[in-house]
Length: 236
Image (cartoon, rainbow, N blue to C red; front, side, top):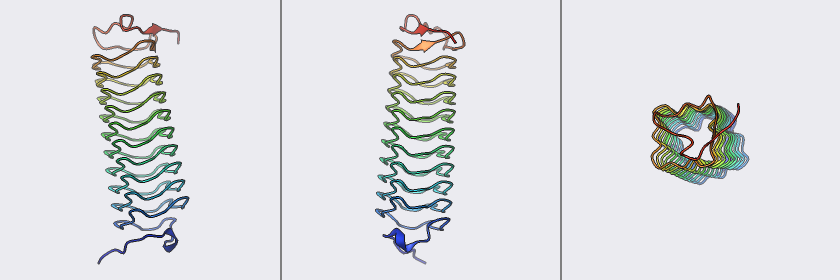
């Protein structure tokens, strides 16, 4: 049976609604309460979800490419394998959201809250995460190549085998972050905080570390000389 295309949120009972497999591309959901709803495989390409409440919503395999999710609430949402290419998530609240293997290529996540978010194997290449809060987030094998991570807070983040090549991590907080086997080639880490960071096996070819800080707990790759790289040793 074909599923009708929805163009107006007024047609729906939104809280806890079953909207899986629907074509809602371009629909205006600004400020709507879609918490606990099921949007599995839904087509929301280009939809306006600015300020919408999608907490604990199920968005697995949903198409949100080009959607406006500015200031939306996505705490504890399930979004694995979703397509958020080019989406606007600036200021969005994504605490503990599960974005495993999601596509966020060139997405705008500036100022977003991603506390303890799960981004394993997600593609955030060329995404804007400037000023985002990503404390204790899970970023194993994530693709952040060419991403803007200026002043991002990655305290305690798990970033093993992450691809950060060519990314901008200037003034980022990477204290206590695990960057084991991460690719930092051509990345800019100037003035970053690397106190207590673990960088075992990390690739640092042509990476910029001028002004970055470290302490006695920081673990560097073999043959890495922080002084020659222009780094500063500080107290605890």
